[in-house]
Image (cartoon, rainbow, N blue to C red; front, top):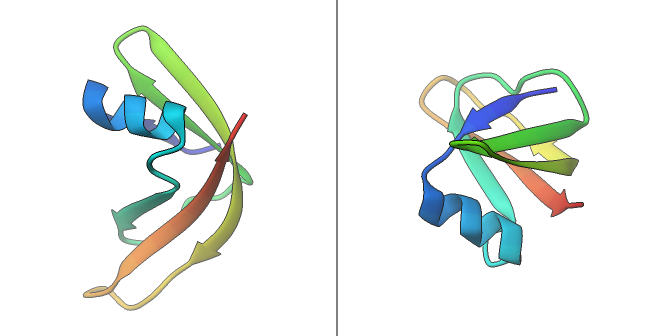
Length: 66
């Protein structure tokens, strides 16, 4: 289960559904759930879709916060 440390503003976007795609450089981490943390606030979501590319490309996750 990937853990992502995010800023408060990004955390709120994910929590309210304004942000549904997370982009990260590198290989996609294993797991079908993601955990986002901002300070002591934690949000868990289900990863609906993963895409991976070459080193210069960016991987993305489509999220469904629960």
